[in-house]
Image (cartoon, rainbow, N blue to C red; front, side, top):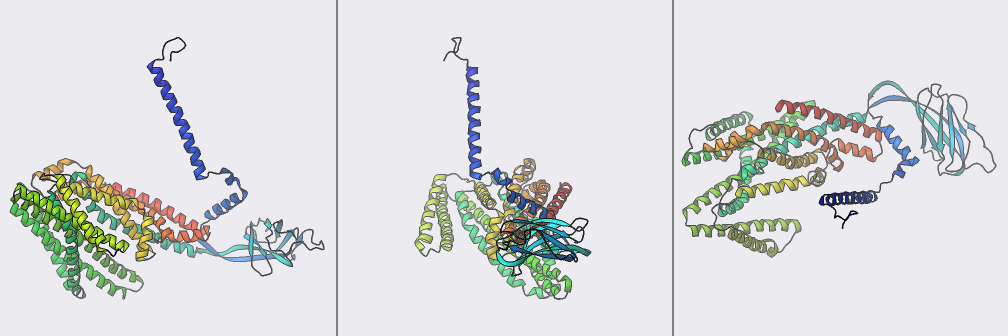
Length: 616
């Protein structure tokens, strides 16, 4: 449209007009969004002006400002005066009514009233600067708190009380009690309970961080794209790896159970156990040093690499047996020490528990190592077989093993569904899934085509990242609800919940750190013919240690704060005690727990910052 001068508007002016309309639309849209947000969240500032709400808020704030940490012996001074509710029909008691003048006394003005009316209570002769409370006492003798007061320097006070809905023709009582502290101060029982629970909270966070970090470190390598993208293999190798993983995990668990059974008898003779375990560890150390050299000038031949792999396998088994012996010895020795250490018997109990924890960790390591070793061995074996056969034979091997892997995976999934939903139909939980899985595996292998390589590493990478994302999506507060059903309400449930969430959080952060390392050392070590394990030990680990330490310290700081939250769901720690006091409206006791949490978080922040500076 032409403007006033008869010329059409310039493109610049049209662009300005369009931007102005867009900004106007954005403002209107934002206004509507926030208006609807106020309606959904029910923002009501008028409620904050309510005298009743303000009185409750001030009462809670005053209680929170006086944490229940110190107590004294107290001496009580009281006075009482009769009150009629309602006033007598004869019309008496229209004015003030006073108690006997001997000692402390109170005056009630007026001396009677209807339910809901306010009366003024004036006290005289009480101790100076004492805190007290006014009670309404009906004929049944139950003291109903109506108002608080504090006496002035002359021992006087004035308080306003509201008469309750307890009308009776009998005389009732207004009672004023002032309390003054005597003797030396001492810590309250709440202070002792707060100290015990805050210590429990810190160690919950420590154990959760430790256990989670141990599992997160190896997972971080599997979740690092730069380490996994070059791991390739044939479709047949990937298929046999997927089949070998559950079988290897079962074999690892079987080896661990045999090791436990074979070493349980040796724990009764400590000296022999220590000697055998030490010898195994020494042999393991020398074997690993030979099998994983730090430097190599030439690429080792295949036979030497195979020998090194065999030595690593044997050394791993020896190390597993050595630590099993150590854990069994700790369980046995801890039980013996707990019976003779007296007041420090908890040291023996800790040694026993630590031995049991090591056993559990060794079981997890054995299961994981069995799965990895069998999968790697099977993958290499299939790769060599495929290289030895013809192209057509290799293609047929790919299709057959992919179909078998799909059937096995689907059958395992069906077994899980049967356990969860108690399905008693094998057609739905075994045969049907196996047939469908075989078809899917066959289709995938057919779609891949005749390529000699398949991105096995990226498959493992995506699976690991998916598991970490799922775990990280579930908050520890939800985890502890489920775990508490398994192990019971208490700090152990909190430790397990924190461990799981730490695995997910640190696994992601660690893997992202691995993805940012310099590629030069990796290429240099790989060029010497080093295995993937040697590459990780000598090229990856030195670059990530400072960041790993820093992130672990920061996670401990986070877990201390999370420990206070999961206690609300039965996870132990100071959160459990805080929830109890909050539910009982005991805000002075809750204030002590809030103060302890704040002090510990502040201390942990400075400590973790100091340790990170030292580590980095």
